[in-house]
Structure formats: C-alpha cells, structure tokens
Length: 129
Length: 279
Image 1 (cartoon, chains in turn red, green):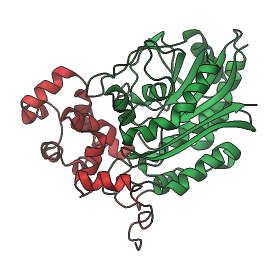
Image 2: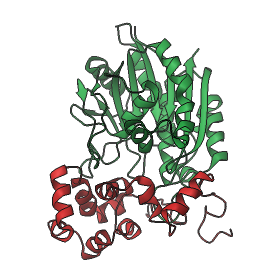
Image 3: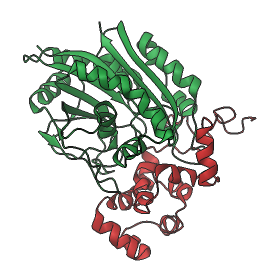
C-alpha cells in the first residue's frame, strides 16, 4: 500500500521525507562536512575538486556549483543541511531563502517587512490567487 | 521534590542570536524583537529556575543523516555551542544536569516513550538562541539545561498528540525526583515560516495567533491538528511548533498566562513567545 503523503499538492514546497533523504544522502552529508573550518577552506579553494570527493550525482554537483538551491532540494537536499553551503559562502538564511523565490534579496527582505508571503492562493497547487 | 513551575515558548531564529552576538540589538529592526523579551528577562530573574528542560530541534548539527532520533535527551555534564558553518556562537558552554536527565530518561522510557540517550553532543542555535533571549549575554548561563531534541526535519515528525503526551510523561518524571528543584520547561521553534522553495517567506499571522490562543486554552484540541495543516498554513518549517506541545503537556490544564509576544519578521520567520505559570 502506498504511504500517506498528503503534502504533494502544496505549491513551491518539497517535504523532506525518507524518500528524499535517501536520494539526497551524500549531497546532505557533503553540505554538513562544511561545519568544519578546514573543510570549508578546501571547498572554497576548489569547489569542484572537493565535490568530486563525494559519491554525489553529477546533477547534484552541478546544482551546488550553480548554488541552485531549488535544484539541490529537488535532488534530495534539505534546507538545514544546505544551509552549511550558504553559510560557508557568508550568506544569511534570508539570502539563502530569497535565492529560491525568483526575487532579489531586497525584494524578499521588503516582502518580509510587509508581513511575509500571504498564505492566500498559496495553499494548494493550481489554486486561484 | 522537583517541580515544573512554568513553561516558556519562543522562536529560535538564528538571526536573533547573530543580532545579539554582533551588537545589533539597538537597530530598529531588532529592537522590535528584543523589546518583546524585556518583561521575560525581569520575570526569569525573579523566578530563578534551577533547571530548564529545553525542547528544541537540531538543525543538521549534532545529528547527521546517519542517525535521526525522533526524541533524544541530553544527559551529559556539558554541551558545547556548535560550529554551524560560520563558527560557534560566542556564548557560554551549556551546563547539563546529568542526575535529573538520566532520571527523566529512565522514568519516561518506562512510561513507553523510547527516548534516545545522548551523552555527547554539540548544541546549535535551536538551543542557544532561546537562552540568549531570556538571559541576555551573561558570563555563564544561570541555569542547568537538559536538552530534549525532537526530529522535525525528516518527515514524518512526531504528532502533536504524541508531543503533548511526552510532556505529561516528563512532568511525572520530574515530580518523582527527590531533590528540591525549580524546573521550567521550554518549547522552542516556529512560528510560521518556510525557508525553502518558491514559497519561502510564507507567514500566517491569523493561524499563528489562533495557535497562541489554543495553546493556552485548548491544548488537547490543538494537539490534534494534523501535520499537513502546519505545512499548508504555517509553512514547511512551521511544523517546528509541535515541539511547543511538549512544554504544554508538562503543565496543568489550567495555567496562568504571564506574557505573550508576537512579531513579524525576524529574518524569514514570525516570532512568537509565551510565558505560562503552573497554577
């Protein structure tokens, strides 16, 4: 019997479940390795060489090189693991989150000051805004 | 005997810790956040708890994807602030209470909650930011802390009802500890926020405020809210709020509300904060 996954129809959202975690295991473990300063130094010195030490898919590696967080999440990344990458780049959680929305950092920060993204029209895929 | 006298709930946004660590508390953006904790700091200075049972979630810090415990209790004598990728926060080492922690683990497991016992771990912003907003920047934290880490990162996370029941079991455990201790339980995380994907930045003030109301007056009803409602209404990371129900379960059905604060935004997140005393 299929598992109950009622969250597939939430727009713009990927729930990190066991299936995603399986796909993203090495991607997430690579990201977590950046909690150690010597690893951050090696990664900064040569992104590609450091990534090649990990048994990740080429798609995952390219997503990291492009700092395309939506693509990393689609291939099994979880934001709390991926946060080690943007932290290593000197970026905040707000900068990391903004990069996934198609907005500039300034537009995103202003949206948050205005009270954030409204849930209206954002609850179900295909919902009328 | 030991007793649970109060619960504190609060968001644990990392940027709040960074604002404090980098001396930005007087900037207008952050003043609005810290103002909400001014009364809390006075209150806790009067309360002088001996121990805080601090319910939080690890953000891919102590627990990698190698091992993901649903409920874990820290029984160590001390816990180091973690390096989460930008260096450890400049905050004091967190002193534990191994005797009470192991007592709670023993009692709660016998009440059918299969806690994971952790004897060594670093603690991240989920645990240290709540200490910072309540105590400021002391040389040493003025309380012992028992970390209770809950998995809210890898879905499915525990249900609200399970969290409420764990709170009840923790209370029973504390009340069977012979030493006279003033114990508080803190539930952290939330409120509405989403950090990932094109829907990042979601905030739901109405839902959050209803959560705050029900948390005080209708915790059993609130504990029946399914995960999907948190995700849809409060954002994918809003699910952290189930952890607050562990703190609520450790209090009486009727409680005395002391303080309530709600503010948008801190970085990506709606900040919520309550203090409830056991009557």
